Image (cartoon, rainbow, N blue to C red; front, top):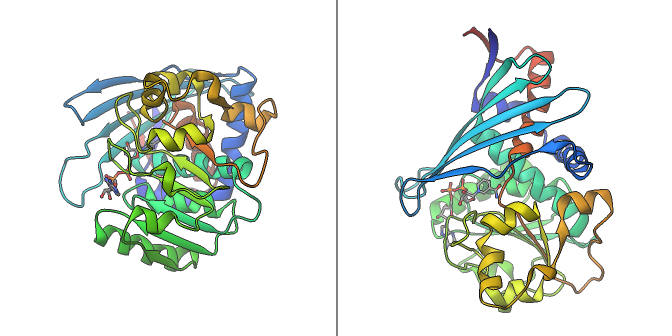
Length: 326
Ligand SMILES: NC(=O)c1ccc[n+]([C@@H]2O[C@H](COP(=O)([O-])OP(=O)(O)OC[C@H]3O[C@@H](n4cnc5c(N)ncnc54)[C@H](O)[C@@H]3O)[C@@H](O)[C@H]2O)c1
């Protein structure tokens, strides 16, 4: 069996964010049409904070494409080191063969940025221009790219507990996106006046509070992915119009939603719908300029599948990657 190896750097070089967002939109349409099988992931809890996740998926279409991601999230590995490392395997459903093995760390960051970007397309105000990025780790730049691909961002505020990471993210925004980014001293400073706020931290307790978020803001919360961890306080969740990446996954994994539900602050009925509903028009989006919209994403296996296959096809036509015989 001959497979294509794509490194994380090659994955990054092949990815164009606006194109990935569009591919993601198509994948969520297919999910809405019932063409996607993306069962809840298997999570092995190695310690209280360390998890290894196994994430399989199938997208049925002209081509039946399958993927399997193995991702380790070890937020306590050490100062300055990224907490996430992943590998993605792509399989061709027509003959069951493995087609590619790709750097899943880069792919995860890109597809998660694309999902956040897609949420902005449907939920951010049309006149949004200030972005607050809370968390400047492995996801930070790609979250910003996802937003920038959909929103005319003129200013970025960055807050992270680690000042060096904030600095290096700000430099990268200037260098690669041509947008100036300010370093904020607190979350409150970062989000004051922001139209879009993204949280992508490894915090298990709230970093963003309802009292700090302006009316009309779109919040994308992507950092927390277990039922007992959250980045948002209950006040924020209670006053927002809530959307999720998947209702099934949110009800199993999203502490940001499950903890306020347990407290009796919201019920499942407070969730307006999922991203598949938004992109297919069965779920209504933002209804007015003063509404706070909240998109909570825990991450879904078919997102890796959709963007992984897009980049695999691009690699084939560009002649990128290394072929190996297994
Ligand atoms: N929803 C999804 O699809 C999805 C996808 C990828 C990653 N994630 C999750 O997103 C989180 C971030 O991932 P990453 O790869 O960027 O991790 P990372 O370890 O590279 O960076 C996390 C950053 O969060 C910062 N941080 C932690 N607590 C903070 C706080 N209270 N306030 C401000 N900053 C704080 C750290 O200093 C660090 O810079 C992880 O929990 C990861 O599992 C979710």
